[in-house]
Amino acid sequence: MIWNIFKKDFAQLWPLALIVALMHLANAAIWFFLEPFGEPRGLITIAQVFSYLALLGSLVLIVLLVHQEVLPGVSQDWVIRPIRRRDLLLAKLLFLLAIVQSPMLLADVAHAIAAGFPFATALAAALSRNAFILLSLSLPVFAIAAVTKTLVHVAAALISIWLFVVLGIGLGILARGGGAPIFAANGIQWMTPAWWSLLACSTALLVIPVQYFRRSTHAARGMVAAAVLLAPLLSLAPWAQAFSVQQHLSPHPALSTPVTIAFDPALGRSAAEPNSRSRTVIFLPIRVTGLPPDSFLMNDRAEVRILSRDGVALYRGRTIAALGYHDDFPARTTAVKAVVTYQRIELPENIPARVLTNPVRVELVDSLTLFHLEAEDSIPALNADANSSAFGRCRTKLDDEADDIELGCEKPGAAPACTSTTLENPAQAVRGPETFACDPDYAPHPVHIVPDGVSQFGSHISLRDLREPKDMEKPPQLDGVRVILRSFQPAAHFTRRLVLPAIRLQDWAASQDPTPAHVR
Image (tube, rainbow, N blue to C red):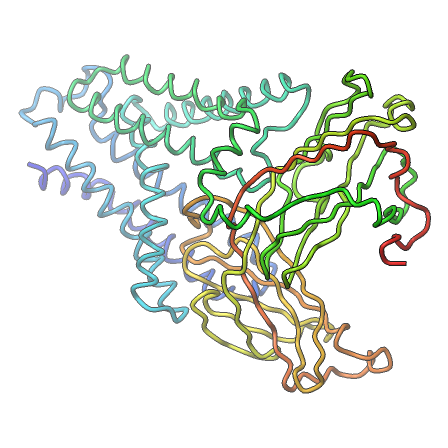
């Protein structure tokens, strides 16, 4: 009976199934021809939209598959036929795996193999992406279809779920006085999709058996509603608890043990920022010691509390209100040595003057992530095409203005979280500055979802630091010049507390002298 139901569904849905399969193959082909430099650039936006359309096509196919035998109600003639509910469910799941998920898997594998990667590597990355989409997207949509009657009902349900989650997040923002969700634009943002995926998958695994074996639509819809109510709750979680979870997931927590942070007034005041006249931006001189070689720190979140000398709270908040990473605490090292930097603190413009001019107690809590060197490789700076186990397949070329090297890499699965690039001319013993590109993702097992199973990354590297000013108008000489490519991975997540018992904040506003004291 399972095979008969499968054949019946295939006979009804094969035209759409063929179109969706061809969309996945076309998506892989488009990105294969666009890589590694994303050219022609005019097609990038179209290619990105097409990737989502291919996923949408798969979801529509899942809904139509389930609705071949609508479960809610008693008006469907299949209900009175001698069809075992187990056979019906297994036939639908077989169709889901063989006709919906398999073309996506084959397209991902074909793309990676065409790009020159081994079959085992291509298959591992494709299976990881396919499994994630199956559990977090396909099965939940399957469950929604099981408690609805038409495609319009499914669309309405999904839009309603999305609106409710957005409303829940918005209420959380209002509850925090306008503060953004703690997971926004930082390395722990993976927790939100992970929570939603866990909820969606768990609910689907409950709803699908309930509907197919008992046809208890009210109970199944109640399960979906309960999951929707739980979805926004993570946005209300306190930062300390969320970061504590991330700390327990640190791959190498011992590396952070020797790291210390200390206030170092001998460094002097920081130089003023260009075009800034604010007197409420404070730069505290900081000395960081104990960093391992070839590592750097990122400040995921810093909170400051300012108290009067008799213990009265004057101000409490984040050191920087803007989302994302703004180098409020940059600390990088290439050798075992101390690193000097400045802790930026943005205070409100309307803060009382006495907070800045009187001695106060300042308490800082920094939530930090230590990155360590994972891999390093080098390739020629001009017209190179090289394979690397850490970076995948990388290519280089001179850009149209002949002042930058374009580096483009493609790799099955997720791209490195943070990379750095440097130009080096061994013949002249010249090495340019290291340029960092970092989009932190602290997920224990990063998964690359769109546009397909192969990720793309790269950078533009300026040639100016390898050329004399008198040679700027001449074509660059790139014989022997190489690109040094390094990747860094999160090693440890930890917090450090810094207490300054008596300090005048006004003394550490930015200096109008453009050269910091520790450089003069």
